[in-house]
Amino acid sequence: LSGSGAAVTICLQFSQKSPVRGDQSLNIPLSFWSHLELAKHLKCCKTTMNFLQKVKNVLVDSKVLSATGLLRHSSHFVYQPDAKPPVDGPTQKMNMFQAINQAMDIALEQNDSALVFGEDVAFGGVFRCSMGLQKKYGRERVFNTPLCEQGIAGFAIGVANTGAKAIAEMQFADYIFPAFDQIVNEAAKYRYRSGNLYDCGSLTFRAPCGAVGHGACYHSQSPEAYFAHTPGLKVVVPRGPNKAKGLLLACVKDNDPCIVFEPKTLYRAAVEEVPVAAFESPIGKADILRNGTDITLIGWGTQVHVLQEVANMAKKQLDVSCEVIDLVSILPWDKETICNSVKKTGRVLIAHEAPLTNGFGAELAATIQEECFLHLESPVLRVTGWDTPFPHVFEPFYIPDKHRCLAGIRKVIDY
Image (cartoon, rainbow, N blue to C red; front, side):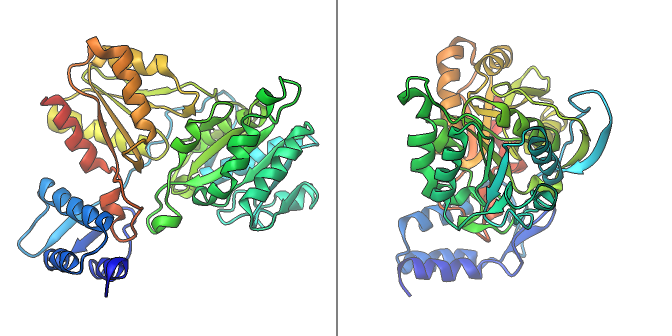
């Protein structure tokens, strides 16, 4: 055994349970400590050792040691549906993948030039988001592509440049990187480098992202920060069915190329009443989901539901009033709403699943420091994924769950 091979073997020995889902817990025997020492002895890679040490620290800090072993309760989140539909009219109860399916159905129906394509899209997609669309609109408008993300993006840019509506699916956000050059250097800059003579607005990329309970390092990443650094793009992350439908329809009609990162764990976990008619959610506008006076909690996607639960815990356990904000739009983002909230509360915690270093929370923290410095009662705190590849059995320790977020609130309040 040597290097990363030894690390993999050790990781597989940590737990006798399957990857954590819902309210299950991950049991790690006391032999974890001996495994940690063994990893040191085998000289595992620095990244692995750093992560193992952080897991140990989290366990100790959270006081989850017991006489019989280590127990970490890691319910990732409890879904918090929107209080009311975004527009008046008839509604239908649906989960998020059904809302996305309905949005694409509306887009195809409203515009004869609209196309939906991607890997396995014809039969419904791996998450069933395009189910039934090929049967309804035909093979020329809803179709499969080769397994080549760069080709999907290049084709989508060409389609959009003709004025047609292109809705391209990247099967997993983790595999959007082969298309990075096409999206960043071609789609985002098309209008600028042509002097506004041409553009590829009418172009929307859909990409399932985030932790799902068993995705490991190739099906769990949240790459929104990579694209937030690209002028010419718009990037959004829905928190549930209503936002997913409204944002997707808004992106389809937008004059700039858009990326919709869809938290895949919400496809079925998120259920709420959704208007049947077409509607759009504004891009670039954050939502205040809960008013508070003591601290501002900022997140997006799945993390919003974690923060809403944490806000309840903070009120009950710490008597702290939390203002919870769903950023919704990563690029452009709603600086006014964020800064107004921070000026009111004087404290802020930012949480996201992506790693800490250069995550989008860093941009928020920098802007808050620049705009709200004299109003801050404590430093801005980020609670995020660790700076390590996304693990498999250690997912409950990697994600910024309610335990870590509550500990973060306590740290900010006690500063």
